[in-house]
Length: 159
Figure 1 (cartoon, helix red, strand yellow):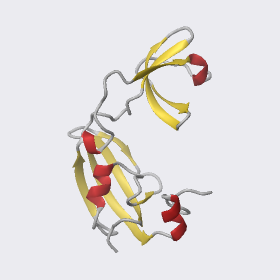
Figure 2: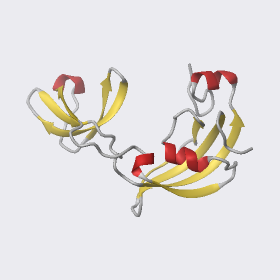
Figure 3: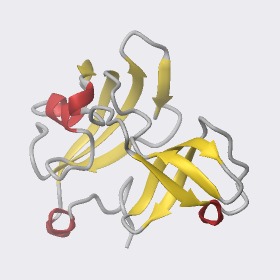
């Protein structure tokens, strides 16, 4: 079965900056499960998966514009320190900040007495990435999965 919109794909990946050592890999855990065509992974990787089948392995370079976007200068915010709890913060550290729009990865720029300046760019923004991918399984999505826009059950979301 080929990968196309509204199919569930379970896959392993290893990601690195182009020409660099791997940053992260799913090889030591369960494969990632996503619903194709619903914005659940970066666009460049999803496009590279189209028409592949279970058992296929491939590598793909994804330009930053089709990954986490270009880095945007001035995308910073001053946040009251209390929003970080008791976490000891240092410049350059990446932390998850709970926002009105859900959790967001931010990079600490400067730590003051009562406020913290953070960079809101995704930590991988502006980086061209290389993915090595192993397609483990491809299946039809259930009606509820398509309506909800994500995978349910094994490797997916549990309501």
